[in-house]
Amino acid sequence: MKVVNIVNNYKEKELAIIDLPDTQPLKNEIKVKVVKVPLTTGDVAMMNMGSKKQKVVGQFYSGEVVSLGRDVKEYKVGDRVCGMHKSGTLSEYINISNKSVIHRIPDEISYEASVALLFGGSAALYFLKKTLNQKRKLWILINGASGEVGLIALQLMKTYGHHVTAVSRTEKFAILEKYGADRCIDYTQEKIEKYLDQYDVVFDAVGKLNVNREVAHMSKNSEFITTHVGLDLIGSIVKNWIFGRVKIKMGIAGFKKSDIETLFSLYSVGGIKEVIDNRFELKEINKALDRVKSGSKVGTVIIDL
Ligand SMILES: NC(=O)c1ccc[n+]([C@@H]2O[C@H](COP(=O)([O-])OP(=O)(O)OC[C@H]3O[C@@H](n4cnc5c(N)ncnc54)[C@H](OP(=O)(O)O)[C@@H]3O)[C@@H](O)[C@H]2O)c1
Image (tube, rainbow, N blue to C red; front, side):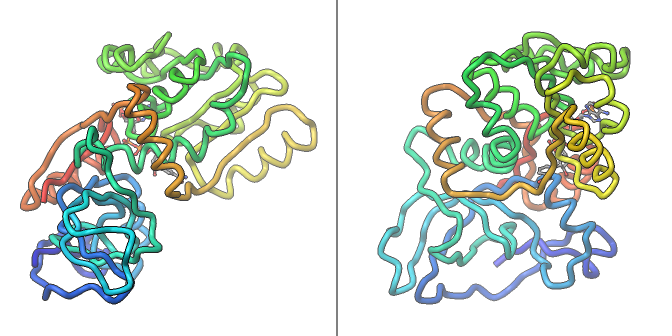
């Protein structure tokens, strides 16, 4: 079976398609014929980390159950499923544990849509779950709203009735307005600092804002949330905690089955929709990787197996 492998233990940061023997599921595993995989900024981050253990790329999948280990009772052959698989999903077949993050895909959701919600949707929920559920209408500014995380964050905030300002480039305003942005700001034309005191929450979905500089412009008791993970944030977090000014949140998103349930429920009632940047065939995997590494995609890059 064909598998996308990292050449030279990640050092080359290139991907190659290799042939590996097909294996049967263990007693608690489900064998899935993979149909669609999103190639994400998370995959690029994993590649850059240089783990020698993981060679197969891809964290999420959607596909059809083709066989079951003898102890698996909750799924059947032919089920359409999606989920997360830490050992790599860019493979024609994967054997996944029945204890992993796996979910049956509802009939009204395609393989592509299901998988396009997983990375951006789980990350957006991780960072914004508490914010979404606030009773009063919040004013939120989303930086990097055109990305995979940003576009789902924008739709979630709108579905829950909040006011959203999307920061992006002018040529991307039309798509941001289509997904509900109340106001758009072009970061290449304007400094956003002058607007920051108007917001209850600033979500830096692309993780490129300078936290020290930006929080100084925000109102007391507002919140700054960022996808960026780094020791450079610790000083700001401690300072703002001591002086009780702006609450700063960072972290590494976890991927939970309950989040997939939330995303599918919202999708089914029209509350969120997948946004596809580009689709690639397996043989075009390095073109897909270049697109993800560009840092400029609009939504999700899908690999068609
Ligand atoms: N901490 C976590 O657990 C976690 C989880 C998920 C993602 N992340 C991180 O979150 C970041 C975003 O991920 P993603 O998948 O959404 O990325 P993405 O799909 O590549 O999107 C990034 C978007 O931001 C825009 N952008 C680039 N520079 C910008 C800037 N200075 N100001 C405003 N917008 C800008 C890009 O468009 P233009 O270049 O055309 O402006 C692009 O549309 C990545 O760094 C990823 O590693 C972290």
